[in-house]
Length: 292
Image (cartoon, rainbow, N blue to C red; front, side, top):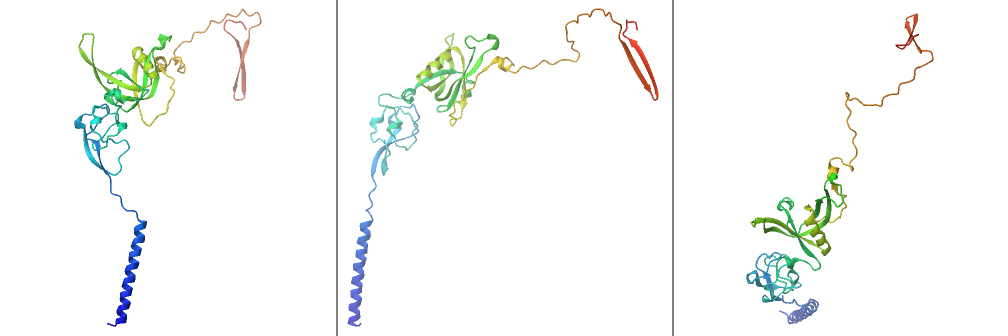
């Protein structure tokens, strides 16, 4: 090979290698280096943890978590024992602080009551409790039925809506004793209410009959029903008056007419004209008993 050509090829190779190195350095300076993924040990639920449950040792497990930790995630397993669950936690989900009750509050129903609210127990039967369809988290309206104070007993009891859009905190069966000291089941529904609503429910449960009405959780509109009385159902004063049907054979009593004094004038004569073709005839007569 010609020496001159060899020198030219060698120079071209060296220049191309230098250019490639410079391009690589320029691209490497613009692309940030990939950071290694962070790995940490976090506490997750070993199985479903429902509100009101108290966390025990077998309810939690440690697992490796890749990437940034969720907000409020806990890494100390022993610090979570004997704390109550206030929001559902599902298997493999990190246990966060906002899913648990404060330290020292333990578990149970009390741990699920938000600050400033109360759990008011209402005793109902299976029908009033919507035949078992009232479950925690649903929304209900509270209706009461009874005779209003100062009301007319002839109008019967009245039904009105007492509270609306109330959250059901829990529903279950409570065992009580009857007059013969025998245990009996009683349906109890705990409603999440304010302190003022708790006073209203306590008075209503002692003096009236309570009915729960299920509503759509998405329906938050507060209506203002007027209430209904027993007399309204049977056409009382609040219902439009319906005139009684009149029978064709019914006799209508009318005041007796005052007899007119005897007429002193001439009797009235009545004239009847009869036309038969071209023949016209007349006939005159008076009332019976009168002389023409």
